[in-house]
Amino acid sequence: MYQQYFALTELPFSIVPNSRFLYQSRRHKEAMFQIQAGLGEGCGFAMLTGEVGTGKTTIAKSILKTLTDNTRAGLILNPTFSNIELLEAVCDEFDIHYSPNSSLKALNQAIHQFLLNNHANGTQTLLVIDEAQHLSADVLEQLRLLTNLETERQKLLKVLLIGQPELQHKLQMPQLRQLAQRITGRYHLLPLNQDETRDYIKFRLTLAGGSAELFSTQSIKYIARQTQGIPRLINLVCDASLKQAYSVGESKPSHSSVTLACDEVMSFQTASVSPDTMRTRRDTNNWTLSLISLLVTGMLCYGAYVYTPSLVKPVITQHLKQQYPPLENIAQEKSVFPSVLLALLNKGIDQEAAIASLYQVWGYRASVLDQLCLDNGEGKFRCVLETGTIDSIEKLDRPVVLTLNIDQQRRFAVLYQLTKQGVTLIVDQQLVEFDRQHLARIWSGEYRQIWQGYWNETLKPGMSGEAVRVLDLHLSQVLGEKVSGQATFDHNLKQKVETFQRWQGLNVDGIAGQKTLRLLEQLSQIDAPSLTSREGKSNV
Image 1 (cartoon, one colour):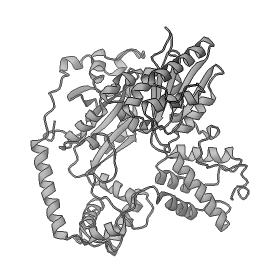
Image 2 (cartoon, rainbow, N blue to C red; image 1 turned 90 degrees about the horizontal axis):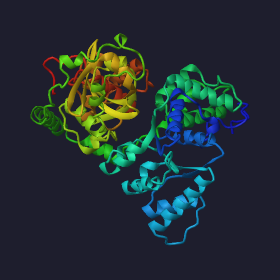
Image 3 (cartoon, rainbow, N blue to C red; image 1 turned 60 degrees about the horizontal axis):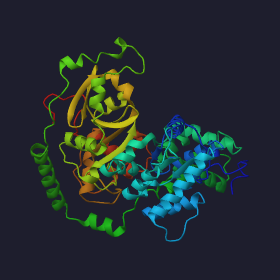
C-alpha cells in the first residue's frame, strides 16, 4: 500500500523472519558466534533463548544459510510431541523411511542408521528445533539419547535448541542435568537498546531501497521506549506508522502519526481488564481495602522477621581475600583468575535458588512461580531481566541476581553489597567477598531485579478506590507534593500523573498505564534493601 509512495523496492518491516534482513547488533553477532562455536567440531548441543520477538528464528535461519555443503540440516517448528512423535518428526524432516506404528526402538534404529550413512559420506547432520520450551522433560531426554551415537572426535547428530526463557528453567530440572551439561554453546538474546533500535530501523529502510531518514530522532526514541527494543514490535510499529503517514499524505511519518500507530499496536500487547472486573474493583468498600492493606503489611513485616532464615557466615576470611589482589597487580593473561574464588562461584548453578535468595534479602519467602521470575503483573513482586553496567546497578542501589560466565557456563549469584573496592555476592547460601575489578571478568551485564508491585490495572480519570489512593500517595512522595488522601482520580491527580510522565520521558496522557505504574513502583520502594548501605539493616 505505501511501498511505491515511499519509493521502497519491498516492504521493510515484515514480521516474517528473513535472514537477509538480519540486523547484526553486537548481541546478534555474539549470539551467532556462540551458537556456531557450540555446534563446532565435536560438540553436540547449542541453545539460543530470548523473549518473544527478539529475533531468535531469524538468527537461526541466518546460521542455516552459512552451513557448508557437507552439512544436512532439518528444522522442526512449534514442537508439542510425545517421544514417538519426536522421532517420527525427525524421520519426516530427513526423509527417513519408517513403518506406521513403529516402536521407539525401530525409530531409533532407523535414525541411527541414517546418521551412520551420513557420517560415512562425510556429511554432518544438524537438527534445529524452534519453540523448544514446549518440549516435555521426557522428550528432551529422548533427544539427548539420539545424540549418544558418536565417533572418537564428534557427535553424529548436532542439535540447536531455540526457545523462550522458560527453556532455560526447564533445563535446570534434575532429570535433565545430563542434557544441560552437553550444551556447549548457549546465548540469551536481549532486546535492542535505543542506539541499536535507531540503526535497526535505518538498516531495514535502506535494505528496502528507501531513505534511512524517514523516521525522526524523536520518533525513534519514542519507538525504542514503547517497544522496549523488541524487533518484532519495532516492525509492527514502523509498518503501522508508514501506513498512517501514507493515509494522511505525509512525506515522512510525523511524530503524531508514530505516536498514534505505536499506541494502536502496543494496546494489543497487554491484557485488558474487563469492564465488569473494573466495576467490581471500583465499588469495593474503601475501608475494607484499607484494613486488608494494614493487615497484609503487618504480616509481611512479621514474616520478614520470623521466617527469613539466616545465611551462613562469610566463608572468605581476610587471609583468603589476600589471594584476590586488584587486577592491575596480576598478569593479564586470560587464564589468570583466582582458582579458589572460581570454585566458590561455580556453585551458583541454580538460577531459582539465586532468585529465592534475592527475595530472602527483601524479607520475603519466594514461591515456585516467584523463583521462575515470570512476571505476569498480578503478583506482589515484579521480576524482570535487564542489562546494564556495575555503575547503573550502583545507581539503582538494590541487590540483584547476576548472570555470571564461569568457564563458559552460566552461574547465578545475588549482588548483595557494593563498595568502592569490593563486591559481596550470595552464592549457594554463602557470602563471597572479592575485589570489584574481578567482576568484569565474569559478568557481561545481564541481571534480574525485583521490586514490590502496587497496581495490577491501568488507572484513569474518574476511577476510585484504594488503588487510586495509593497512586496519589506514591506520586506525591516521588514528586515532593502534598498528599490529597482522596481515593478518586480527579483533575489534580491527573496533573500529578502528567508531571511524572513528563519527568520520565513517557507519553504524557494523564493515564496511569503499565509503563507509568512500573516506573513509579521502582522509584517508590521505600523499604527496599540497599546495595551500598548495610550497617544494621541486613536480613542476612
